[in-house]
Image (cartoon, rainbow over the protein chains, first blue to last red):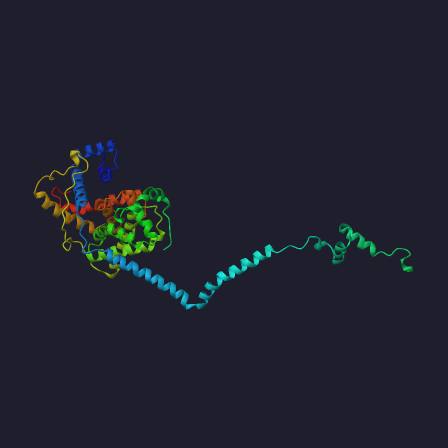
Length: 159
Length: 227
């Protein structure tokens, strides 16, 4: 194994990323190479030192300070919402009127749906025929009887 | 605040329905984030309580200045609150928070460079009050172990080494410093680091390799065997 490869494998070994076979190869090289062995000891020592460096205690508790800033942010947000509504009063009027407008639209539409539809015959028959249908004994023949009543027969002109 | 649901974590929150009856300090992050998205400020305060130390230390290791680190941590949480409606739950909350904090650190660093401010390197200004025990975890093979681990003088040497390593990390280029901090100090996985720095795992591995080579060059004068 060359020293350059050995250096790369040392870094992987420090992170426990070598297989057993690779570890064995690295170990064999370190037994032979004084320079690499010294480098390995240095890196291993530095790693242990870093891992065992104790945390530094905080000079003061951050919780009250952070929460005060969080509350200030919440207050700022509420103030900006208030400004949003107060600068343009028409927004208030719109916000208040909108529910009523919607309700009115729903009511009108509902009443329109509920009202009685006109008889289908009125779409197709004139007022005369409808009238005739109401007065004759056979309403189904009203259109025919009305049509016949308007035809002049021979002999009628003498009356 | 608009209500957003965490689609990817829905099963977890359904399973955790019993959390409602527990005090908020025992709620999972998923539950707390859901509550905070619905406007529950107490839930967000609990998240701040949980992660303020981690974010502060991350910012401190990047900026090397306590005041700046506190400012960054504060700004990170406030920004997290503002961006909470956009958080979809496709990453862990703390990964997302780390990303916000890291971006703020980078912005601050760029502004400081633009103003021509000198970069701090030493640990001298920082107060370390608590000592952690040396971890005994990890590989038991002989070739991994530090031969000086059991000696009393080792603690003095370790403190000195900590100082030197810290100084060396502060001298790394920003992109390499990012990945080293997240990997070695915060202990995040390569996948989590990739999400935070918005790149792929291959690039993270490559940056870690380059960062370690830099550290080797910076630390070799202090290492007894030399390189």
